[in-house]
Image (tube, rainbow, N blue to C red):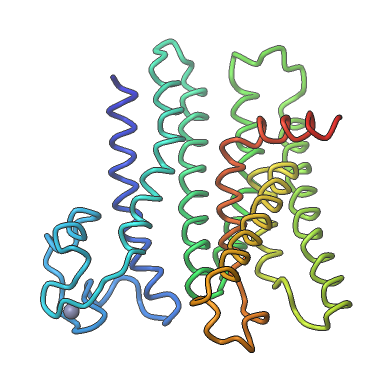
Length: 299
Ligand SMILES: [Zn+2]
């Protein structure tokens, strides 16, 4: 019961944070302040009443249009709100499953709470990056670098909390050793994940003499390396590239999508968006997918 109530609450909170994210995603690229002025229609500047600003519900009630000028608000608003809400239910479900055990030591409660909040933060950043790259082909440093630094610290803090916990599953390492090795392994993942993209982009440049994969994508891979460790980040990269190629093929097959026939080969696809989708999938199922792949490859 606590698990269902807690997860529902997390989903509602996710809707609210998704709604705030929408404001950021609209205003950051234009370098506008995210707190003032109040939420308004981007077309007629009509200031929204509170009931026009309820996440998801208002969009559905207004059928995606401004109340005053009927301008189309766009699919991004409800999609971002739904995405954050849906992604947040996963760490919340795990958290409240753990918390329903009333004999849990307090330090374990802190650890579970810390991990749930950390992963909610990760999903919030990932949705932000996916949308910014899709809409603006822009992966801002302030998000990728911040995400990498925070992600790099999550595993060491978790290791420190686990080391304090009475249930250690026969862990014999000393606390400082566990923390250092978690930090080192994260740093290695970050360097190798970003390095892979840098090498690919350098090889591409040698062959084609133009930029194929941007520096932003390398920083995004660093972020994924920090959170998902190296195998998870590599899986995210593989999934992202396959997904990007599929979308490119579909765009080639649809005649209307190639209006500018001369330049369509130079058209940039938001690789970062596909990497983010790969990262989300990898965060849920990296274990089973990698195991299935290794079996298939005959390892
Ligand atoms: Zn309007």
